[in-house]
Image (cartoon, rainbow, N blue to C red; front, side, top):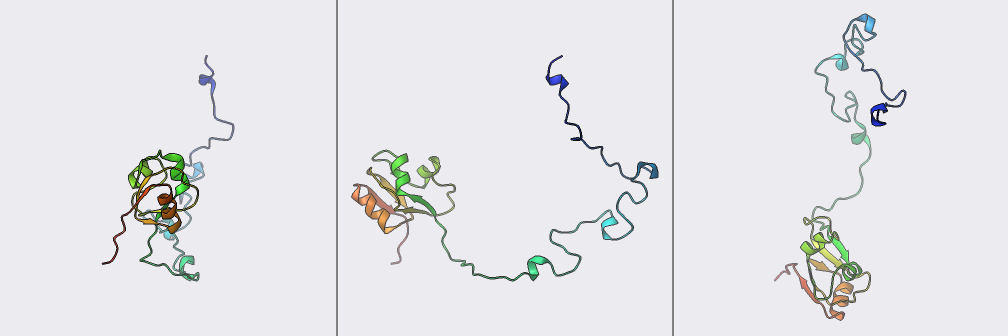
Length: 153
């Protein structure tokens, strides 16, 4: 007989199923472990998450603070040091190529290139925004910068 055929769960790992409504001798007869009457004893009992029986719920009675700016732009950011490691000289760097190289997680956010690290290769970089240090570093490495951000005219 193979070793796989001898496999058994650890002692105490498997519990007996609670069989409800099978008479008093089962230990779960009568009210079927639901107690007497009340909301939770009903068959259609469904209480939403966070409901506290009519009491003011915790999420409503705790203080709120801060400010959420609805017009804030959240960018996907990439450092020029990362570009230098993953791309060859003359390569075109854009959102699609960054997604392929797993430097950006989603294409839903606009792309911003930041100036941390050293750029040693001339790259053609296309993004929605650039930090001034990143723009300067790309141009110093004889690369080209193309901004997709529309300027107000």
